[in-house]
Length: 284
Image (cartoon, rainbow, N blue to C red; front, side, top):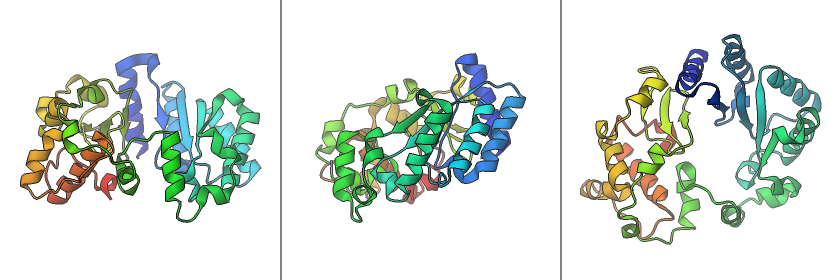
């Protein structure tokens, strides 16, 4: 995400809710682009846009205590309130748990324990072998039972299939109006696409076309066919159109989000609902 797009979003949130605006930097993994992250935060500080509520990382980069201290001091100086560290079998398939432990230990020493959150704390003490476990379907399923996940994105693939126990007709009448209107926030992707709450891949608008504060003032589900259907009928409302286009429903789904993601994957392959379904990154 360019510095300009990030700052425009930050300014828009400030216009909407003033000092109550909470800005989170997450990903993906923001520490893959350390200097770029710092550039955004410095510009936000220069424009007096307020503190950053939270920065999220998987800790892959925390292989050296000095690097951790140096970087956390920079973030502290630039106005980071809290650091959130992802720690679970899904991340530890790829990230050394020892790096995560170093980050948490040094972070709590430097910032205080109340400013360093771990998601999920119980995995910090587990061995790398138990977390990575080469096939790990059983580990993933166990984790998802202990800490329920939203079956969207990659989680709507093989992981969701392990929890599929609901027939498609059980979602009839389950609309998504509260998901759009009651979301705690918005997500903005690197392309400038805006998603409501956790519904990644359903585009409300793009900050390159309209400021985020104006986008929310103008929001109307009737302006977009896909969003209107989800708003009034939920993903079950999309089934008739999908079936007519060749979609074959699964016997069971884990949740309405699982159904919705599966339908959107089908529609994006067919080039349907182009204004609302994207980017491709969310469905690959």
